[in-house]
Image (cartoon, rainbow, N blue to C red; front, side, top):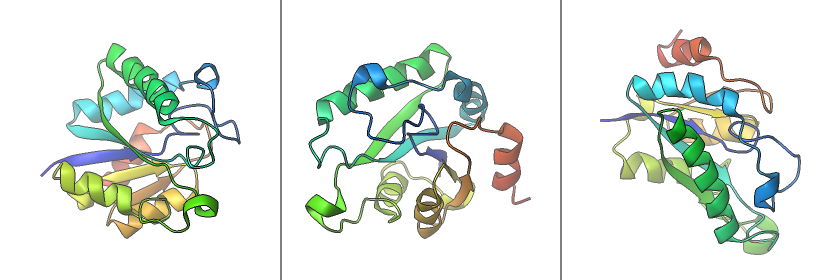
Length: 165
């Protein structure tokens, strides 16, 4: 089985704007996150994005715009020798679509990734900047790590959580 680092996007991999990021030019990758994640990637962890993108349902931006942002993000990681294997996103918003199984704090996106990539939840963590990220992780049997928006990921802290310390 594989092991993974699940990552929220906004506030973890790109700058938190406290609003929907609707334009590609407003998408700012937090490049200082790449070195600690590359270390984990080099240790055999799959890097997987798990992100709510309710702005799609609200028609604030399109799935094509989202794909452009993700391409920028994927390319930045690849330039430094790491690979994000997939970006799972929930395009729904409760005011438009009602309840869905994928929107965090539900665990649908994590469960889909776990099944698709044969991931062992017990060997994996989810890093997010909101309690709903940790809740979604825990619902899928994955340990959650809560950081502040735009806070640099601490490799040693992630390893300690992975090792059950």
